[in-house]
Every structure is written in C-alpha cells, then in structure tokens.
Image 1 (cartoon, helix red, strand yellow):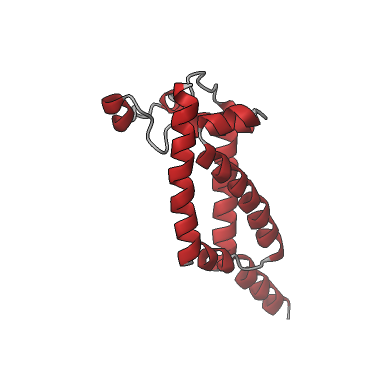
Image 2: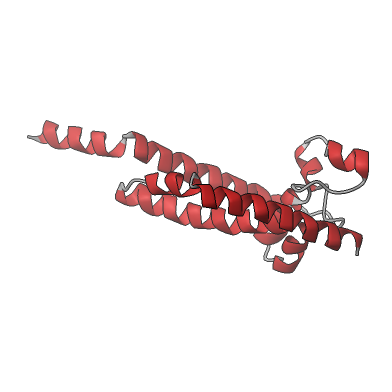
Length: 150
C-alpha cells in the first residue's frame, strides 16, 4: 500500500509535464536574475556585450538597429523597474518581458498543482497569433528606429 502511494507520487511528480513546467520556471528565473544583474546601456543597444555576446551584424553594417537590437537592454531596464526606458529600448522585448513574467507565474502554478501547460503551445501556434507577432515585431522595429534616431 505504501509502495503504491509512493509510485503514484513519483509518477505524478516526475512526468513530462512537471519536468517541462519546472524547466520553464528555472529558465525564466535565470533570465530575470541575469536581466536584473545587468547594467543597461544608455544608447538603447549594446547591453548584450556584457554577456560576451558578439555585436549585431545588421547594426554594425547599416548603423540601423535590427528588430531585436535593444532586447537585452530592455530586459535590463524592465527588471529594474525602468518601464519607459525598456519600452524605448525595444517595444517587442517589453512584450516578451511581461509575457515571460506571466509564463513564469503560470509555470510555477502548473508545477505546484501538476497541471498541464499544453494549451499555451497550441495558442502560440495559431495562425492569427503568429501573424500578430510578426506585425508587432515590424511595428516595434519602426518605433525602435524612431526612438533611436530622436
């Protein structure tokens, strides 16, 4: 009887859903901890160099930030409460920051209760959602360029 209960706990605790929820939770905690520890670049781009990452080839070649330039800077500002600066650094990264925070809370909730996280995958794979994300990336790039040159 005790063995059956122990096996039920092991099966519930160590299934794929729980492993996914725990992995996502740890990954997002790591991302936010690193973001909080970084000093954001005042230029709006370049904070990633503190992580020993190479410079953006698009930016180095054209002098115009790519759609994802400023993402690390935005995360660093947002992790420290600089919402305006984070939005100016990269509006799309701001959306990712807050979406990631929601996923952090939700994955923790799913991990604790042993619930599936599956519906989010299907939501993100919906055609309308992918078109919205693509349009938002382009719009945020335009806003990013505007803030960069003004």
